[in-house]
Length: 238
Ligand code: ADP
Ligand code: MG
Image 1 (cartoon, rainbow, N blue to C red):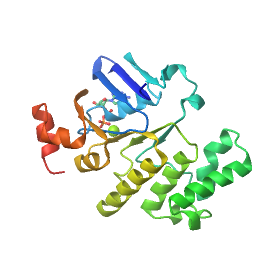
Image 2: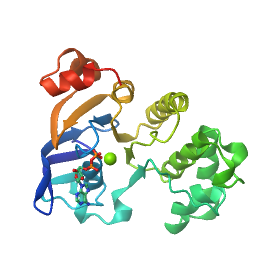
Image 3: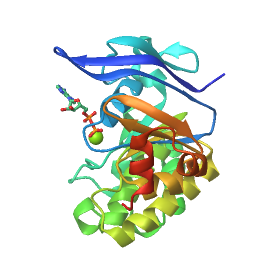
Image 4: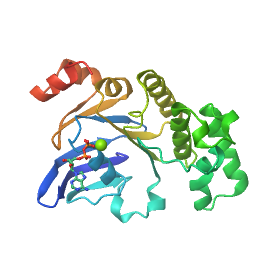
């Protein structure tokens, strides 16, 4: 059974339909990247998967249950955004621990999970710092850490690297990939960056104007684009 099933999902804002019936099945442990130009509907689709936005028609299922019928805590989804929204007055440790505290996790368990994540993310020496005392890459890692400690079944990423400079973006891309592989967490990652999509994806979804034009392994999409748009978008340099 697919971990996430996006089944003929449509979305209208007022009179305007912006998602025109998208189907994507995401398997357990898979890293799926949705790639497409700005405004094509990537964030809206991701927000519907997260249950943050209702679907106009069709449905999103996670582990066989409709996402809107699951309580937020039971969705077991962690999201990493472009604006990490770390709490500026809290230490790195507290930022990473916050969600677990809210969920009522025991103190010792919290400490263990945060320490483990901090080691994975090379943040072990920075746990007492405030976000403003960190580099952009480190802040991004804290946002990742905050997501990881909750041991989510599903990771959702919305252009998490787009605020970083080019060099750091490449480095963090590799880190995210390695981490996802180690943890085996089913991931849906949204970006407008073709290279990022090609590097990260087990399968990529090329999206254009609210339509998933092609879904497949990066090299298959690259070598055998099915539409003019896919050919132009994936073939062209970033
Ligand atoms: P992307 O993430 O690919 O840049 P979005 O999902 O943000 O695209 O937006 C897709 C389309 O939906 C755009 O035309 C955008 O203006 C529109 N849109 C997104 N959110 C809203 C909203 N809350 N109300 C009205 N229109 C919206
Ligand atoms: Mg977006």
